[in-house]
Length: 593
Image 1 (cartoon, rainbow, N blue to C red):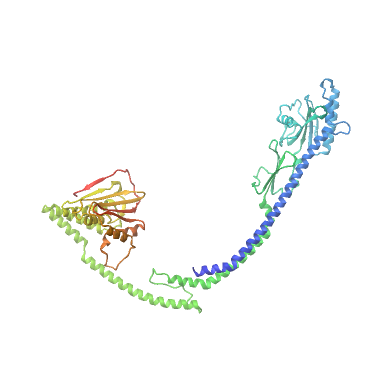
Image 2: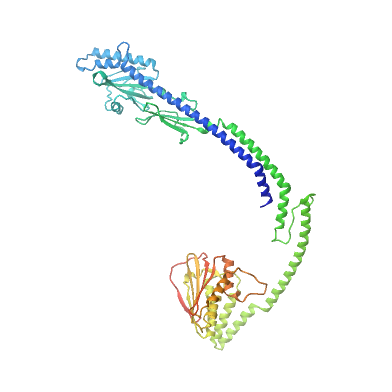
């Protein structure tokens, strides 16, 4: 571990970690206290709103009861409707007197209830009585509620209070939003006979909850009638989406003994903002302490650790011959200055020695290359082979001409240095040139069979892989045609892998020798002194080493052999990007070029 990391870890263990632990504990405790306080506030606000809804609903029920039953001067609606039950004996004067009584009762109720807009009584004989606060309002003449939904639902409730949705109702002669309650009037003394329906029009302000809570700006409040799923009150404006409700910030409950459901969604984030000032001060204090610790650490690092790291970095630079030390540290009078001065002195001596040895080796290498170029002149060799080929053709010596031409092709291919990669077609041509020479030498004692689809010809692979393996099969397997008569070479694509198989029907390899070969192929690659190489370096081990160095571990040769039956060598290398068309099999038996 580097010295800087050790120092940082030490400071963290001594200062930062304890400070962060204390901060996390204090922060957690403070947040818990805030959450409990906020939850208590939200619960109390919900209880207050629920109590207000309950009071408003009780006021409505009391109003309906008062209109129906109570009257100091016999103006109760129930007694008046009871007197009108016998339609055959009712005169116009009776209707007028009933209308005045009901009007007086309505006025008495409306005088004490400011949220009531109008009150109407619909009797069984289609008569309508009632009173409104303004002369412009009133039930339209000829209006019959029997087929209306609200009238039918009021009858279905059989005595329970029907509360309408908040809407504009033309039947009242108004153009503003309101809601009304309806209640079925039955005569309990006369077998609960149906006497009529009482309808009370209310202003929405009776359920206005905005004045009942201090959280109206940060809470969405909705009051819903569960009987028809209509909204009676909400403080969510249409121009904004309101607060996003979640399981944690929303409370939904039915108001006790009412068909109303109250939903309150509190913006806890806004509510917490009032308590976050102390939390921000705490975090600022912790941040200030951390900054002071970091500044102290940087100061120590700059004075002591950076010079040591730079010196260490200079010491591990081994790819260059001249190492330059950072300026400004050799003049220091402490231990760091001593280290820099002594290291600079040592490196100066080493650099001088390296420079001298390097120049001497370059001179020797240059001399060796010139001597090699003087011994082998490729142009001279090619020209000589061309001359032999021409002379053989003039003398009608076809075999000599063929061998010299094939040998020239092999030399050109072997010393070509354009790229380490060649196409399969170029590698096959090199093998064919080699087989031309060997077939003439061995007097056609063996066959060479190619099984390579033409669509693989442009696939790239390492140079000089086929020919050494074919040569091994000819020399060691077939013994130049004395122990077998066929060599096969095939190429396939298997799961993004190029599979090259070279087999023969020769004498095979003994088991102990086969085990040695396999073990030798698995050994790590080693390099010997310049000018020295193992006998097998041009054969199997050489190919295995080249494949591993170029493609990486996992690729290379596998050998399988049965003594007396033959040998098979497989090479697996990755497939380079290339287009393949068709899947036909191309097989040819090479005899003459």
